Length: 126
Image 1 (cartoon, rainbow, N blue to C red):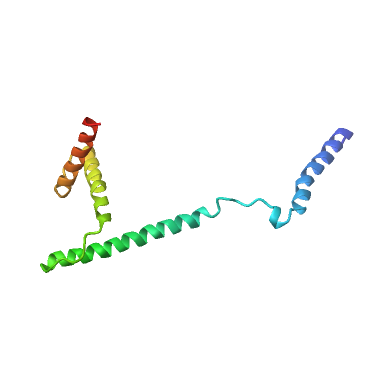
Image 2: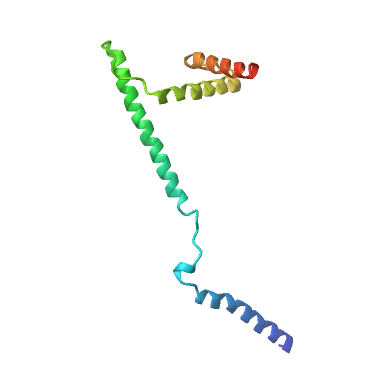
């Protein structure tokens, strides 16, 4: 081996040992970088749990309303307002299905027609 090869080999050893030396001298825990987004998975589960809890409560309240309607007695429970939010969603799902497949689902026909009318009316009358 000539002198140049030995010099290059020694330089490589020095360069390779510098990161190891830097890792050995780590900063204390308080000065180390922490990921600010580490809380996001936990936060996502909390929000999804809150939505699940809300929709379970809406389902229980709607079931109580449904039982009173079917029984034929006096209706003391009210229909939860959150149920109204599902009608436009189901109408748009039915419209998408009709546009993609050409199959008109009869159970969604009234809500789909209502949604199409509302969208058309909003486009005509600004």
